[in-house]
Image 1 (cartoon, rainbow, N blue to C red):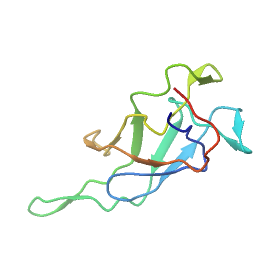
Image 2 (cartoon, helix red, strand yellow):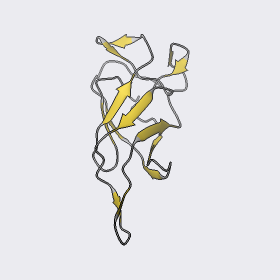
Image 3 (cartoon, helix red, strand yellow):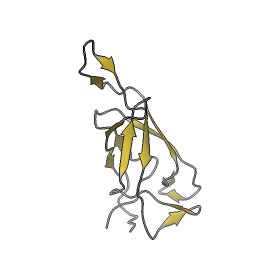
Image 4 (tube, helix red, strand yellow):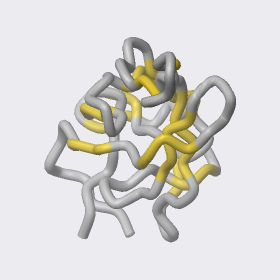
Length: 111
C-alpha cells in the first residue's frame, strides 16, 4: 500500500525544484499535517527554460493533483498518497510533467 504524504514529505518538480506545501488539514501524522488533494502546492526556483530562440524561461510554479486516495480522507478531502497523480504547470498553465514524491513518514498507508 502507498504511504500518506505529509507536509514533511519531499516533493519536487521534474526539474528538481522543491514544492512548498500549504496544508489545510488539521490531521497530523507524527506531528506533521497530512496533505489533501486540494492543498496549495507552490514551486519556487524551477530552472526549466524552453529551447526556443532566444531561450524562454518556463519554470514550474504549482502542482495540481488529479488523483488521491480513494478510501481515506482528512477534513472531508481525499488524502494524498505516495502514488497520487499530479501535474506541474508553468505561469501560462502549460503542463511541465509529474511531481516526484518521497514520503517522509513510513507508518500511515492509504488506499
